[in-house]
Length: 291
Image (cartoon, rainbow, N blue to C red; front, side, top):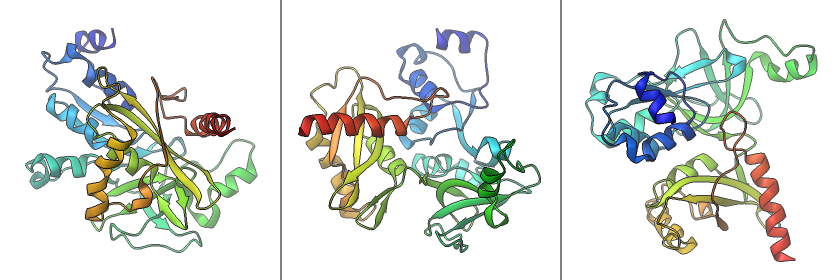
């Protein structure tokens, strides 16, 4: 019904939650439909490379943007230079799945836990803070929360990211979702992106759960595509991730301790992965299993 509505009314999407797009590209009904006029801007959740690739193969001109309600809303959007637009698929995916380049009149920085500015070298990771003429001044009748939002004279987003010398933003995670294991940071978004490339995986969610030895450890929820039940296992997932470890793209502590296969992943009312609920439910399930 969703596909029939969108195609029949020739709707161009300016903002699309990845869950809806995943439903679209996974449907057999779109294989014989011309979607080359579609331009889709993804916001609200990270755009994975596997979803971006699936959309591009259908002819959809897909981009990512970044912002929040407090920034009214956009702070960055993908802008492909001519050389990048004519690049191969790997180049396209590299740029299209970042959170875009910083918009005009927006000053975006990244800071460490002490509030020090970090370099825009594509490697340093810190919290995104911003200034712009249209950012909210605060929350209605919540002065303490407003002061916390603007501490140090910058709007604090709660998002952890790196910024390249060309001012491309790469979101690593939400501050509350970064998995701190043994003094190291594991990006749940990066691990979700890798898991989405496993053949047969339709969707993945990664959360950190308490661990007596390491503080936290990554745990994953996986939704499989039809027909892959029993073909994708915990062992095969860890085997898939091993080459990235050997190349140094990720470290061995990225390997999830537990993988649960489910029929669906809990979402919020706006379609985002509900990691707060997932953490609570997984802790309860594992506690019962260990008891």
